[in-house]
Image (tube, rainbow, N blue to C red; front, side):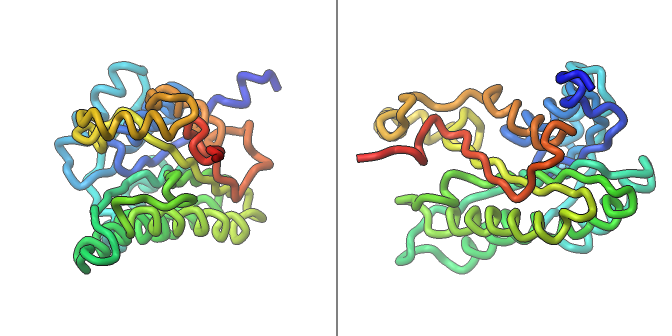
Length: 258
């Protein structure tokens, strides 16, 4: 097989949670560009429908949108069944939906803790649980989880975000071992700071931006296109013997020394 053919996903069906904007949308675009049919999931149907239409127009791929609360097991089971009913297969799952709640041990409330853990960890588990039967039946699957640098190092402004992403990294390893014999790989991508709506307001603060640049060996914030190759790699045949791994796309942050 030619090298570039290892990174094509023609005929595959992909699901991307939180695919309406930011990193999720970038990942959806990448999968569409690689030949996959793509389904975007999000709480706001209007938002994911708009993103789906724009991605389809840009790539020529078939891109659809479904409304789904990924913190609800019932919603997840209903929508994955509908997707499988429509396409007859589910090949790639990108667990990207995420949120944050600022606050340290002294001021983080229970609602903030529950919101982050439900969105960032619970959704990864139950979305994966829902697609596994379809992937096992076809003896093929790719599950890609969006983790974070914060899952490996602590944050000064949030006790729960990094904790949730550490859970995602460990869950990636756990599911990789459970599913490996069924030709289902499970891997994670851990970004650092990228230019998305998620951190747009923070990046408008010159002191915050200076702090990030100072802490990052490459002295800059990441561009979204710099995440494309990671998701493409884990989604494709090219990574068929790789599972349980977490790749940092971080400008060197986790390699930072004294």
